Length: 224
Image (cartoon, rainbow, N blue to C red; front, side, top):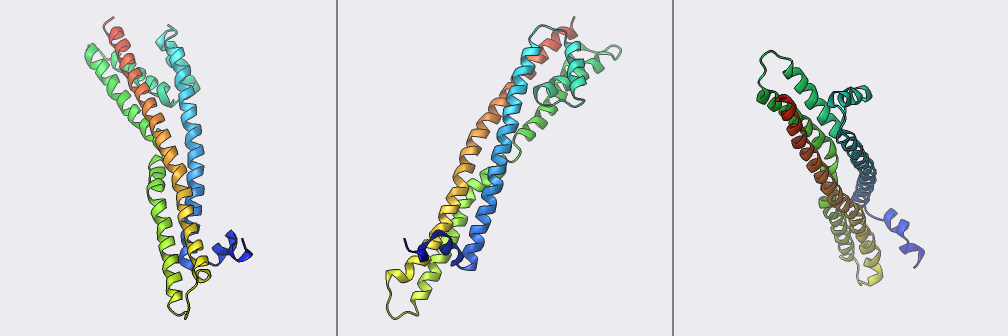
């Protein structure tokens, strides 16, 4: 390949619009990769924390002791521990009220845990919508740059007396780079979105199952 058709020469020789499209896709790709690695770390930590807390919860220890341990580690725990902390705290508060109905006590604890579950869901799904947007729009943004570059190439042929492949090849090649960059930004984002959405759904199901199981435990304690 001649130096005139080198990758960097094609980018530098592209029109301003195509260069802006390439720059936009490059920035989006960098941000997307940053969020991909960050979400991977967050979800991995959430899975490990859920495994550890479930082992502690089902070890047969006293719930009040576990609550004090969780509260000592963090005033506002997150994940499964956060659901347990908020539910048990509300359960203990309502149970202290004179003449408290056991059913109302358990339902109050469930409502608080549902609110905490909703917060955990929002935290886990952070940045997933951005990855979905990148995956669905980046190819079209790159295609826009390609169409614009090809259009400029054919416009240049209008002033030429004799059209040759060498005249349009650089313009078409630089335009196709925009499409390639769009796919480079979109493909990892789509893969990460599908993978992380599945991971989030599985974590939320675990949290929801724990909530129901913990509610059953609280119901037994409320009637004890």
